[in-house]
Length: 251
Length: 251
Image (cartoon, rainbow over all chains, first blue to last red; front, side, top):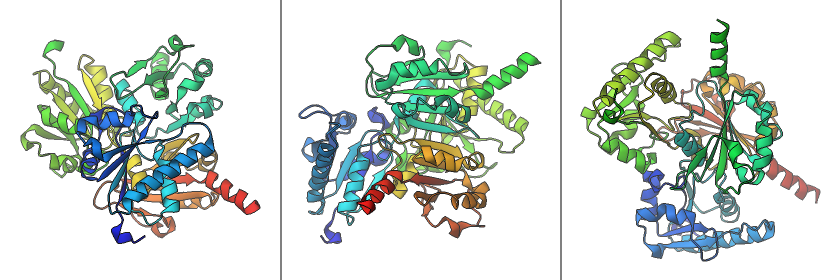
């Protein structure tokens, strides 16, 4: 295909859920592009991304939901990614600009990454611009009023299912550890938290950036309960605070 | 002081530098508040934060620069933080709303954290709301088109001066490692990078989100050069890609 007739693909982060946390740039690009694609959670159902951008007043006619498989069947997922990429390329070849909207940030635990990598591999001539967005990790810290890092402190972010084993060691080195998608391993996480030093403070946050957001500091009260997919735990190791009070107590 | 006459303090993240990466919420709050305080880099000099919000057209009269000491003299710094907190409290006590603007996100390697913690300790009755912002780490990934994490991958963020020793071990476990403020230890970092496996790709980015932003992939070309404070290195361990190609080569 000729590059001069190709539209640009924008990967647009729309933030964690609150429509006001969309950036001015994302809002402008969504107003300007010819077509907007977004992931639909269920066939024919509502879309979280669509709800985020609703207050922008983008015409329905230029939006199209794409059902991305979350089937755990890898081959079925790959097929839906290919279908999505081909649908966008059909528009781009007509010189139309296309936005793919994604919750949070497009390159941070987003399905956009799969589409992006497939697009680059199969259609390397397509110009792509990525608009960063506010992440759910930033929004969670803001909601809880929890400092994430200053000066020499380190931050780690990991899907909970892959990080519980080494958690104690990690918290020796990292002041803040985010555990994402805690819902699937929550009771196991509670058992791990009991083994951590008392200077490690734990905050559970779900659906951050939406009207249903909540923060829980007594994590044991959630044991055995069903938790939503959009849930995370922020662990903060208040080492400096602890050291300071130890000095005071000793003095 | 009586709580019902107290204004609210907003900690407002204005993103990495591009005025368009301000969120709609930050723009609204900066328009609505009575007073805006921002950090000035030098006495009487220009402010990076002020330049970011300039296109919003906020009246000069409601803005006030505060010189925060970056003196490396801890006691002098603490004094300037106290002065800033007291200046804001004087407004809040008159029932005025106050915003402190901060580059990036207010709770992520920001001087706002020091002000916030002092405010909470000295004036716990002041209502505080924090507006998260796009971080320079997200903006750097977007500029480079570099996926940060998907699925089971882990992310670490550390000030370079405190992380070079354990870097090789860290990259065994973390798919992406951000090294912040690399300018002070850059040549030492180059020596460390030489010892890492070839599957680790390094990207140097400076002044992300400004008109002077640049990305450099041949990091050796920067050896011995003066680098700005707003510089970071993103290390990406393409283990999965490498494993896939190994399988192909073996097959």
